[in-house]
Image 1: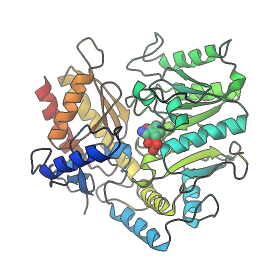
Image 2: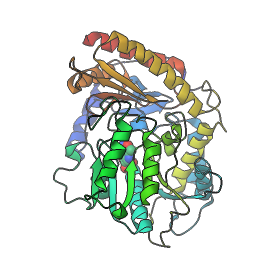
Image 3: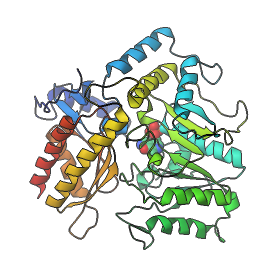
Length: 451
Ligand code: PMP
């Protein structure tokens, strides 16, 4: 059985000799843009555990940036991939229909369709490509050009996507000119409310700010879409106030603007529901998905209302998008998310498991917050949890977060930062309560050393 409770096993001091050697070769031959925050070179994985080339087994609390939904080498996913790869690897979905992608689209839209409202799917290979497709579709459908995005957002690294991205300067510096006709508005972060608002009023404040732009600055009838992460990922795992997304929907309806939800990071069961926007009473026009959708096989998806997906035949496509092997991985991932196949020790389905284990982690982290004053905020939903480090004056403490993150890594917990001073907890959704407790113990021990 998978996911047996156990402790990380560190056989060599990190980094071990093989790790050090591969990292040296990596630094000689791979792109200078790659970051190497932790000395870790994976060799193989099983469930929520990853073993490096020196035999160190680590607990995976980041899942390759919220990707490995079903953990590593899940037998059900492996079998599905193996079966498809022996049939055919590629034909090209842009030109020929394939049952495996037809049925995958049918399955995905079931999670968003409402009575009387049909949806359609375009498949890509990645999140950024899904975002590009969303922008193209919104412009093509509305005949308008302008896109509004949010500060602190991340939407990918292609030209359209980095233009929309509203976070770190390094993503844009030296790469311009970017896409024209894009504006950014604040994201309603209840922990750091923008525009002089409070945790309670920040959603309304952002909505009023957007509407104020429509008076004299940016004519609303030139705005094709507003793109927003329903829960912001790279920006710091932020959950907006409950009135924000419904308010955005009302605003978009008032001015004929498409509402795009980027669910690339928070979607596919991670927050305890299939899509993170489903925690709120709201329906978008377009959804982008990727990451967790196929447990690590490269796949992205653009979902759109049929009434919106009006681009003409041949106007958009992709050589590999919707690859059948990736689609097989997505089907098997959905089997586990929906509970058609059950993962031992994880209840009826992985969405419920994410909700329950996430709640346990959140409760424990709140206790730690009471113990450690430098933990300014603990927030999230399901297994999408952010831990924000603060200085005594309440400002973000990125340096302390970096120390904490490295110290957790050195104790056997793979983790990843986000935002200015946040550690994200985004483990595989097969994480059991026992495994969560092991990770939490490492976190607690680490935090004690920081006091
Ligand atoms: N959108 C969001 C919300 C993301 O978090 C990311 C990746 N971090 C992307 C888009 C881009 O996805 P990809 O790296 O697959 O292009």
